[in-house]
Image (cartoon, rainbow, N blue to C red; front, side):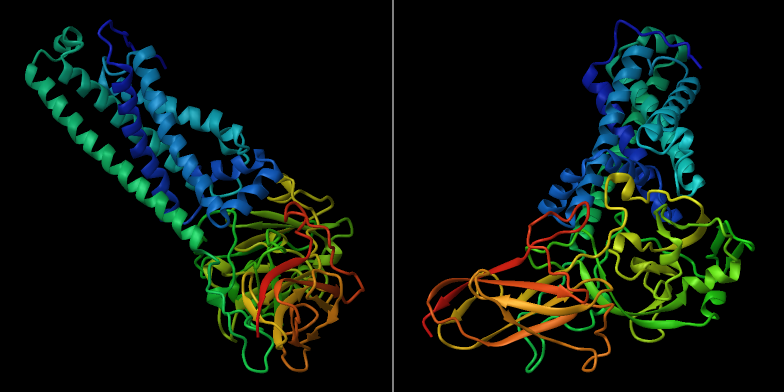
Length: 542
């Protein structure tokens, strides 16, 4: 489509056209921000966010996470939103300068701009960011992706054309062209007034969008920031409780905010290399033989060298994946289980691991009768022993049996395919910088984890690893929340450091198979952090 535009010699200034494009871009951005909230599904901005991470080197991702922590994801999203505004400004300038938008028929111009913007989004932007031509590779809801793109394109076009025509009318530019078309100075005045209205709407959209993005960044940054307790319980194993309160349990997802799924309409599809494809409601899954117990979840992004909160222990209840697979009849050629979640997240697992009786689909988390919360994957999530959280999708909607493996969401970005939990230990107390009395006893407390291999030994050093002492490990006979599938708490009491000055406390653990914690410091990505945690304390006169 080519409109009968005539670039005129009395063109608007580049600044005016760019400002009009930015204001129109604010309206489009607001539509794209609101749509996922109203539709409860990923949209265009989320698709771009996911696509950007495909091009970011793992080392840079690790640096960003280490530097900005929980804010990293939100800051990336904010950068994408700013880019939308910038693209709106550039488009406004280019269409005015090269196509003369603002001087032709308003209907034709608006239609042209809308089609142009929509095609750029669908044919250029989505493929560039790994979502395929016309979103063919998008894993989420098609209507939730394309509908807001169309609305945003129309909103941008209406605002841009109106603002440009108004600016020309106010400046008197193009009076010969527009005047002949209208034949009435009153119409030009009304255009100028309409432009002011659109300008106010555009500024309001920019303000609301900015507030929304800032709120998202702040909200994302506040996740996993529970207050660290600094006083151990008398006779206990330190400040970290054996069971992490659900409200304090860490939350990590590929998007900024969790989905909220209607349990009544939700279904789990089982397909692929099975004899009997099936579709389960939540009630049907809950009617199956149930399993329950405590599991420790640990994020692959968790640090070793500092106190880290990306780990937690809780009670889960659900059904064995093996029972779901048996009901559908797995074909002999099947070798892998492919998971798909409502947010487009994908993962995979060898069939023999999926059939492990400890691999579950959980619908409860917390005290008996407590359903999963939205941020933890309601109504159904995967639980796999011995793997980092990235291998255990939330908001599960589909299980597909396959004869081949497929890279999951993070594997496509260079992360470890297996994501087996490494031997991990940390010191909860004392903390870095604490003062301790020389020659007087104190206690050292912490936790250790190795996924599904258990912890057989924890050793602590008060002289930066020159000598070691065995710590006492809390066992399952004293707390049912401590098992071979969970973390353990440990303590070393009556520790005495005789000399004043700086002292470095170090901890290391050994799993149930005899594997000693790796002492070489490595960043979390792509396979999980290694190294020992060191805590520097000041020993003062007792």
